[in-house]
Amino acid sequence: MSLLKESILKLLKNSRPGYLSGEEICRSLNVTRTAVWKHIQTLREEGYVIDARPRAGYRLTGIPDRLYPAEILEGLATRTLGREIDYYEKVGSTNEAARERAANGAAEGLLVVAEEQTGGKGRLGRQWYSPRSRGIIFTLLLYPPVNPSRVSQVTMLTAVALASAIRSETGVGAGIKWPNDLLVDGRKVCGILAELSAEVDRIGCLVVGIGINANQDFGDFPEDIRDKATSLKLETGATVSRVRLLQVSLESFEHWYGLWLEQGFEPVRAAWKQMSVTLDCPVRIHTLDQAWDGWAEDVDSDGALLLRLPDGSLQRFVSGEVSLRII
Ligand code: ATP
Image 1 (cartoon, rainbow, N blue to C red):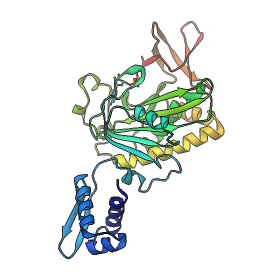
Image 2 (cartoon, rainbow, N blue to C red):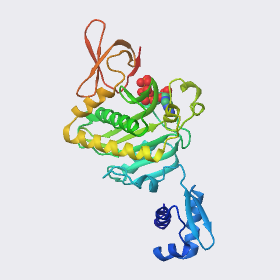
Image 3 (cartoon, protein in one colour):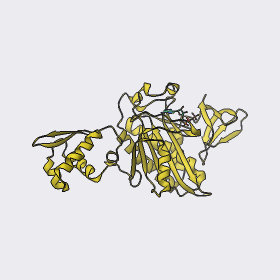
Image 4 (cartoon, rainbow, N blue to C red):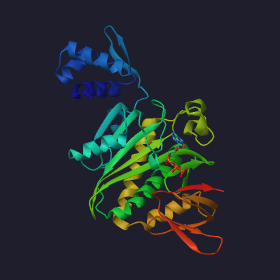
């Protein structure tokens, strides 16, 4: 958003619910009436509802349901996360866009957000579906100063941060399915994909992609996932403020990320276990070439799942290439 347009929007917001005269806008921003008119038109095209009345001026009466940076930044209580935002109406993949920005030197905390993602991915190259402006699709760019072996811990801290944000903002009791999904009554409401570009023993950059099903209706999901997906709107019966939930998610992530950097994995692991819906359950794990049935007993200090097998032995699974089902 251009600076001038942003300033006009701010003035209109501050004068709500009243009118603000064109003359006053011109005076405070030192611009011409034509410039103000042009930017008001652009704001309207972006979905802002602005009423114009002769002699009274302009009045803002509606804000679009868009994840515009100006909306996200208003009232965002983070220090570094989401302070710089790339916004796309449509993008192939927010993770990919964030990686490209990293290659050009973007700083930690960059938020890439999109209304629509055409090539969204889950783990193992699976697709992530999200119809335009229904979900919240975003990626965070991080440079954690730790060994690449700790990346799966970031997936887990993301799950904790997002489950907490969803719980506090919507009251929906999202639980964590190992390693990277949030479920409500067995249906997926949020997916997480952390991807690393690593050097030998140092993390280059880490992109954490998150897709929250916010306002999808049943028919918005492709038929093949209708029985395994849900949205917060479907769960609560109310439309979710995507901007607000994104803000709370960023604040929650910053909290958990900071705690992890300061105190290590233990506090994350403890919270993860509390919110898990796959621990203490019988599960089936598919690796590339085998299926394992057992009891999901614990996660270890690397975030690996410890499965108690029928013969009493303990088998350890790292999250890379395995799928888990509750049986
Ligand atoms: P598994 O269930 O085998 O462990 P996963 O849950 O880890 O796999 P991901 O790779 O995280 O799967 O996510 C991709 C899968 O999620 C897709 O194969 C599809 O079934 C499902 N999916 C895609 N889009 C959505 C969505 N918007 N909401 C819920 N589920 C989705």
